[in-house]
Length: 589
Image 1 (cartoon, rainbow, N blue to C red):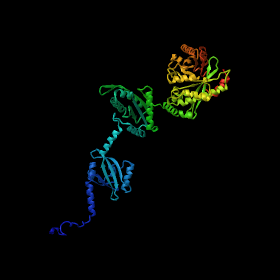
Image 2: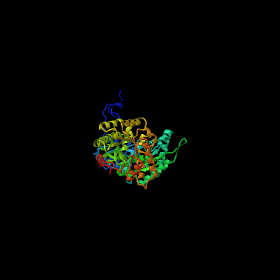
Image 3: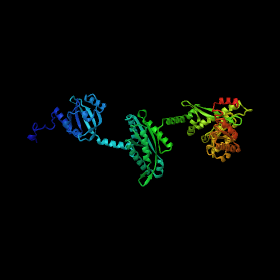
Image 4: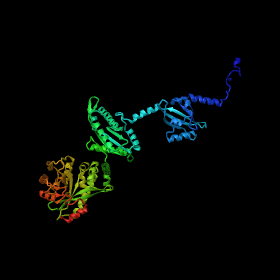
């Protein structure tokens, strides 16, 4: 039953199922303003002029300012939107309704002085009165977490120093903006750290690294607050971002060395003493790169190690150029052999009794397309290091045999015997290739009699030879090839071993005959030694060649002593094969 209070058309509200009256624009505005005021998200309406029209309570709380006091203030100044040209331009475009939503992160200041990191969004509304809605999200906690994670990612857990990543970040920034236009780097490495790890354990090693890092940091702080980083292992870097010159860097390096050379007292009563080597580089920031600077520092550190350790070494452009050249030569040796860039010159080996040319030593030269003609001292050690000596030595052997065969065919017999050719052989050729096979093949292909080939090996390579080297020497001797010991007297000098080796000749090192130049500078001991060596060699059935004969006085004294042949500038410098043939044809002078 319906009472009178529930009859249709009676009471304060519409009947159930009736259509409610439409909301007015005032209702929407009131709802919007209510939501704006009670929202937890800090917000403000900004007019086309850029001034704040209205700010909600959350916005005021974020900044510690009453919302009413924010009205009329410039939003870009308050929110830091005018700090850079890009955000300033995007903000103005948003106010004009031409741009898209602007989003950026800024550091806002609270009224009590503390800072708040906030993510700010400016959204165009399309309304002529309220041009944009500015919203702010407090991201301080998130940013603090990011900073902590970045710190962990950018620092070494053992030493707590900046790691390699942060070091290169700071180095790149310093090169782009150096206060003095110069930059310096001390590259530090602990000498013998591996031995500490191996003998005392990694726990002690880590303690040592931590203690060393503290001392380095103290030195760097005292010297001007320079960045110290651990680059890996036991390597550290001290970056001088605004260098004043090499003197500043070398003083810093001296201080670092002194600090590290004091013994370290570690936990557990362990006392450890180490030294350090430091590579020092200082240069103009505009002329280098992060990679270039660190490579130079690494190279200089290597020099400090090679020079004896426990020292600092300053980068030397000339020394580095030599290193770069050395690396370039080493890398292109094999290609040089394949491209035919090597040639042979020959230096005569002359009988001291009659001045007749008995043979010639083949000396290899490299006609390098970039560095010009290079003597063997520039590339043979490199070839021995990287193994290129095997193909190079094989080519020298074959070419020298071909030339000796030409000489033999030009002068086949009496009255002058054909010249032999002497070829240097490196130890690595004996171990890394089948030298006996290579020699046999060269003789077979050229037709040169084995007796006209002499192979020179250094004394250190021959003395004490056992196993494969000795078998190779014996096989070569059995073929009829002459075996000579080069630079005799500079190696082991195990004279008793000579009788057991298949050696036919000794070549005395030039240091023994230098004192023979003039009677005024004669050293009696030199003559006694050479005389004894010649007599011993002859009793063993060996011939003796004196190297580095540079004048007639030397040649005469060697002849009187009984030395068989001589070689040196007194007779001729190394020369092309045709020039040597002409010299031989002319006969003794």
